Image (cartoon, rainbow, N blue to C red):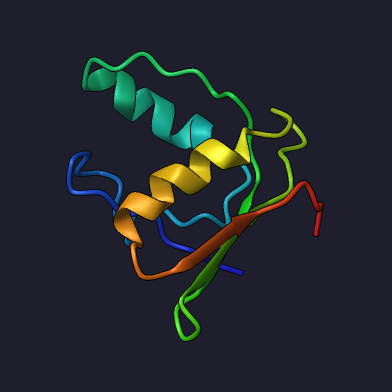
Length: 94
């Protein structure tokens, strides 16, 4: 699975520079965020499965280094951008 994180608000976060297949995204992104004046803290992790054909997104799993994020918060953020998708979350590891 490879999903792409992209935002126009933080220019270095784009499909060329960052994909969600990397286990250490926070370590990669945090120094750049600090350069922009942001203070960041990782609150947990997980996986995002994106099926663009069926317009479905599933948030699940956890980070071995940071534990599980609050997936309900992640889903609410995704729903703002993917308004026509079915977006779900679970505590499943796979």
